[in-house]
Length: 129
Image 1 (cartoon, one colour):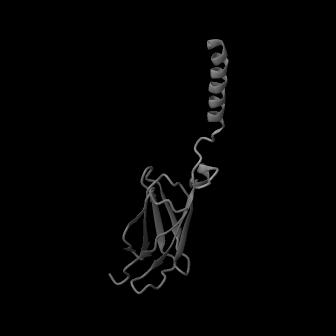
Image 2 (image 1 turned 180 degrees about the horizontal axis):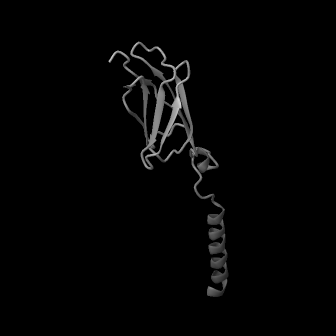
Image 3 (image 1 turned 180 degrees about the vertical axis):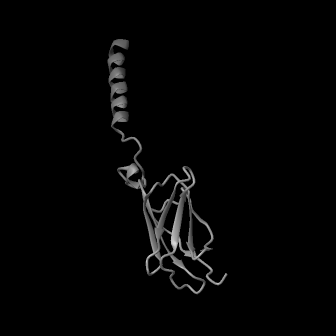
């Protein structure tokens, strides 16, 4: 009897192993065939610098500090107060603030846990201080 069941058992084990190999590893139930496609490689930070009356402040200096390396990048706000920092690492926290004529906005943070590919942080400077 073992001579009949032995080869049958080997075939069943082989088929089971083959079926397990054919199951895609890491697939999601939502139908996303590539789970890494949702990972953000880089992100962009945009925003506007305004005064307390929500009027844009042109030529304000916007500072972006990488909290891991302490490296600081700067840009000038455009005439409409808009600024943009492209190609930021998604795995880093950034502190951001703006300065115009010696007056500074509050410091805000772009967190690494903020998973938006395009984040928007508006900054406000009290020009009446």
